[in-house]
Length: 266
Ligand SMILES: Nc1ncnc2c1ncn2[C@@H]1O[C@H](COP(=O)(O)OP(=O)(O)O)[C@@H](O)[C@H]1O
Ligand SMILES: [Mg+2]
Image (tube, rainbow, N blue to C red; front, side):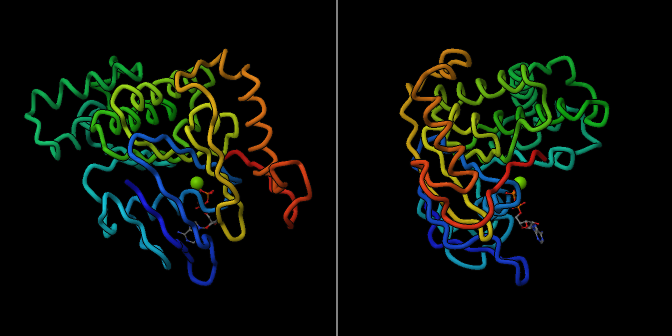
């Protein structure tokens, strides 16, 4: 459903992305992992139609992207700027549902249902600025899920929540992916998370940002926070992705040049 061909992006003369080629099939959950600053957010913004790539093309359902397409939802890394401060939490979640042609009552009911799924039903009447960062992030996730997009783009969506909530939200995303057949492209700098969530993991290298390798995740589709992470296949994949992200070859051989990349948390 998504076809990225020869995509490149430069900010002025800073070449951030070069020759990115990636295809995402309907109902797939693809994770993109890479070191900080390698161009993950830039890639997602190009796919969302928020910035125009300086080379190549993004085609969604057969149509070249030119502006933000319908049926697409984005959870931004910078959640604090993505909610409307003058709307209540419930109205923030309900707002995009107008585009789905729902009446006011239905929009409110759907918004409450989505807030319940992220554990924030009690915050419905509050304003975003009355919530902690982690809670605001959960509101952004609820808003995206309520919209039931055909393609969901998520940029480090669990960055500022505590560990327990993070696991709950990871499993919530997996549930939407499985039960609603939602196609999801999720960016993370967390190696474990990229393997735990993905049907496929795309590892990016930096300077310039490009695809280092794509790995198919050979784990059963039903994931479990304890059992999956203890699965030898998970442990093996995590090590392989870790080596690739740090700049080495997947088989543990020689690095393909440059200093070892490091993962900085943002
Ligand atoms: N709006 C912008 N203008 C200029 N440079 C930018 C802009 N956004 C990002 N960059 C630069 O592009 C590179 C990639 O950024 P980004 O896509 O945010 O990486 P990531 O999300 O992987 O951390 C970084 O060097 C960053 O400083
Ligand atoms: Mg980013």
